[in-house]
Length: 238
Image 1 (cartoon, rainbow, N blue to C red):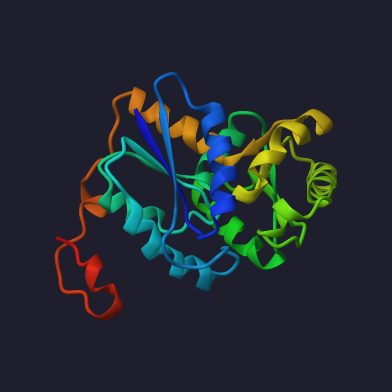
Image 2 (image 1 turned 135 degrees about the horizontal axis):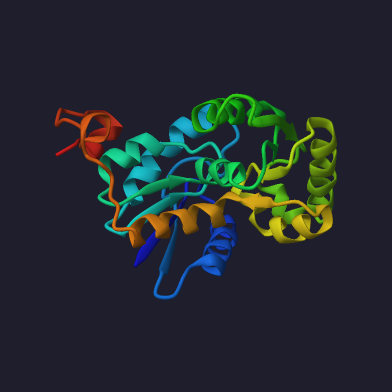
């Protein structure tokens, strides 16, 4: 089984971090293919970033058995599902669904405050009302999560505050760049702390094991052919 894990930003060091998290949970016989977007932003921290990350995601989508989009905003998820033959899983989607199997409510700990609205939007799509009890931002830029030696400690401290403030049972880490924080944070806080990259890979490979594929009916059928022009000509549906 091949599972493609796509880093929707263009930072190779972040792809390496994502790949390590994915490989740690890959089952026997599962080959993880971690790829970096060939175009777009160095990190994804705004709606503008998300929008311009989508062409890069679609450009690298391949014929793997399943795909994981490793950005917590789940950019391009629906578009990728229209193109891929196998399941496509977003890491926010996977993490929030996993959280609902482990507690009554969860809190999200994310990066910049400006991304909190997107996390709330995704929670409204993925889980029942009230299940996401709060979204808390550490205000550490995505690319500084790896380079700032204090980042892990700050994320854990914010997660502890979120548990108390929201009366939640589970913490969801709201950035692929936090993938390496989950085990230590879970041990320190004594609650489940979910890394969406790991959750996404396990969910994707489980769907393949079950022999399940995207429906291909209605909304997620292949996009209808039409002319695309300018910079997007190469993305013309066939």
